[in-house]
Amino acid sequence: MGASALVGPSGDAYSSIDPENEDGTVKLDRSRIQPTSGEKLRAGAARSRAQLLAANLHAPDVAFASTASFDLGGYRVGVAGIGASPEPGVATPDPGTALTEAARSLAAAGAQIRVALVAAPRGEALRLAEKVPGFNLMLLGKPQESGDGNDAPAPPTLVNDTLVVQTSNHLQTLAYVDFFVKADDFSFQDGTGLELEERRQSLQRRLGELERRLAAWRAEQPAPEQRIAAAERDRTQLARDLQALSAPVTTTGSVFRYHLVEVREGAGSEAAVAGRMSDYYQRVNAHNREAFQDRTPAPAPAGTSRYVGAETCSHCHNQADTFWRSTQHAGAYRTLATQFKEFNLDCVGCHVTGYNRPGGSTVTHVDALKDVQCEACHGPGSRHADNGGSTDFIRRRPEPSVCMACHHTPHVADDWGVALAWPHIVGPGHGPKSLPPGGK
Image 1 (cartoon, rainbow, N blue to C red):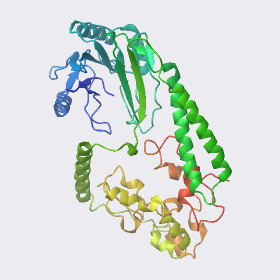
Image 2: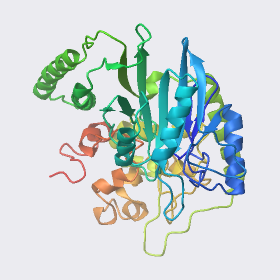
Image 3: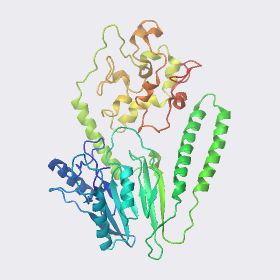
Image 4: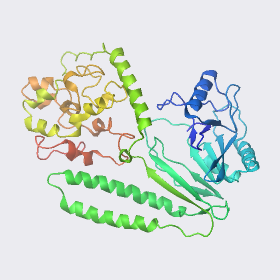
């Protein structure tokens, strides 16, 4: 997350992020906002109907506030925003001093429940929570984000009377914190059992991994029944252990309860947001279709192979082709087309064969190379076909790096592996002893 906070009219809290990041959100240069960045920041706040909060940041063209207060559920809730990790060499007010002043301001305004939004490395934020009392909840976001790697969920932590919560990057998880007020007591006790939360999260991850393994094993022909039976017993025991750790904690006063939820496609979507995303992808599609219409693949150098497409392969490898057409690889391009992403430069390369390779395909010239075909794994096949199927001109079994070039986080689960996926992509026609890449 970025270094300032946006608080919407309903109390929704957002943090600003660099606009050059992949998600295209607002840029914040810690204590100084450049004019173009300030305009973008104001525009983002206007679109979201949110208020800019940054108790320790100042800029002449951006109207930052230190705090905001609003009524929610019959109680007065106060929020402060802090950017606690400035760029090197840029002087900003001490975040501890700024947060202390914000806490005093919220108390004077009658805020009964107080929340701090902090963008900082986790260690700095925990020290800030220890230094500055007076907040019931601190929501922590990373000051910078880069790369595709998924962060594991950080367990919630109590620092004195402040609950510190940090969700995973790439919108992998959502954290819910509920406050239950009893007799106007705003000293909230732990109603979750936070000392057990890390254990609960570990059990949930193991259950998810086991479910994926079971699905892969059941798809094998023949299915490894003994392995499946043992895994089902493990799953039952893990579920029992998780249920035992999930019983409500008994308390006598006001409590908070914490709950972490993984964001998965099965959770559904919100129509208005989905519509705006679809409009965006359609605009990108239309632009790229025209902008790159003349981008053709480079020819294969003399003496090397070009890509020929699965139709050519099927003349000799009919059984393998029949199986391939039943896999998700065979529908990879269609999944883009239905979402208006077939000309999206971030997507198309992993949904076609020979992308940007000599004798292969480009974003607008895919012809016979739509989908993840035979040559995506085995390499360009023209000389293989022209020389009676000689294996001297083809890659018989790909290295794991071929698969991992597309199957990496955040596009797959952290526990995804080639061995688990193998039965779904290799079947009849590949040989009875066909092993995964790297297999022996």
